[in-house]
Length: 305
Image (cartoon, rainbow, N blue to C red; front, side, top):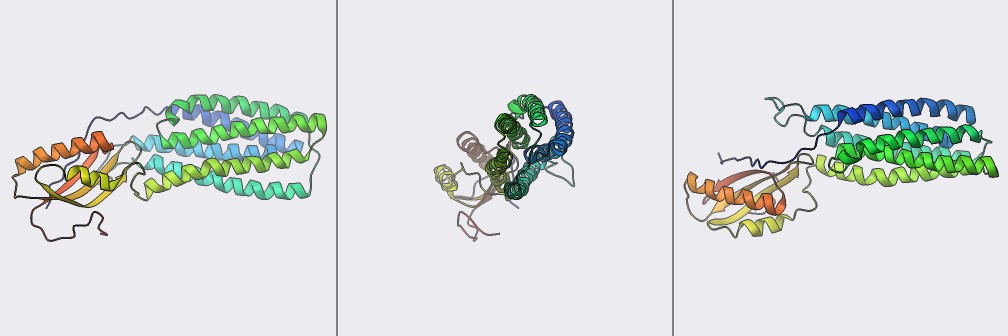
């Protein structure tokens, strides 16, 4: 059995503000209820689409909050990684809902283009202002954590896009009030939907890559091999796996062939050097190495298990 080692450099884990998520959930629940009623009364599809988007915000914020709580749970015998991937899963779910909702909005906008309706613009204007204020507060609350955490970034993007959507609805309400341009309602709905797809796709792609254990894009496996093979006594580095557990942890496991049958104490010295290189040059903070000498196995960098 090979020697395994987990490299535990101190790494900053951001304090995810659960309280801010709760406040945002409360604010978006109020907005959703108000916009649903207002959309039905005014006949505005853009307002209803904004309400629907707000509803997905509420769901996404709840998912983010649950993931935030779960991610802090300790590991156990049955869950050796704990729930460290909960936030990545939440980001994937939230990004998926953004895109699904966007497609539904596009379908409704096309239908409304074919059959435009007169809309009560005053209600649209006041409720869009409410959406801008409430979502603006939520965006400010989550901005700091969104810079360092994919789950919080997914929640932040939901809120930011909804605030921008409310701005668009406000402009549309003003155009309908003063210029009777009721087709603007459908045009805004279409624009909101396309924007949702644009912001959702990137987050969906990134969270999917983490869930699928893809090698992080900024890490070049061949560069790692070349760097490690310069260490004295290392003959070959092969059978490498590199993956992201979450946004704070990048793991590497590999087999290392040695030129001579070294002692465990000498291996520990070399392993320390390997860990330092991987951490400082490639930001890999968890390392598991299988040492080998004269073993007949595949020596390719990547081996299909």
